[in-house]
Image (cartoon, rainbow, N blue to C red; front, side, top):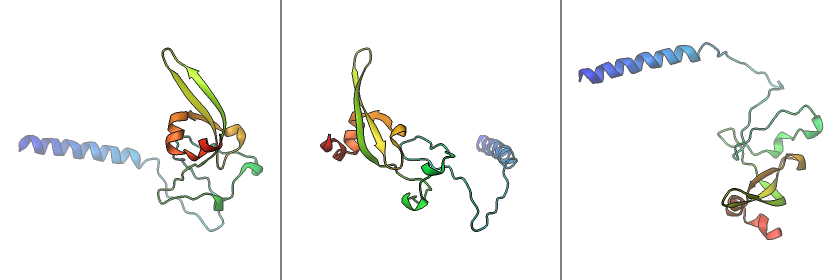
Length: 126
């Protein structure tokens, strides 16, 4: 029981130290109606969007379905290209995917097997 008490005390000490470190850089923010803010939005595929200053590339907010966790799922629209990457002793097929709210220049290379598993309807068109 003594060892358990010692462990609990040390955990409490460590937690209080961490709490004091985290509170140093935080500040309370208040926003008014019609204020403009930047939000970090992380798509499910793991790539963070960059802020672009060109107004023609800004997507209207009504077109993005944000869930309760303040994230959204990026949906593929079409497959633009296919490549086979040769490694030492195996070959990996990749496809260039155009995503819903992105332009052709922002298309990404994804593994073909993963895309076939998640989005088989894209391969019926090809």
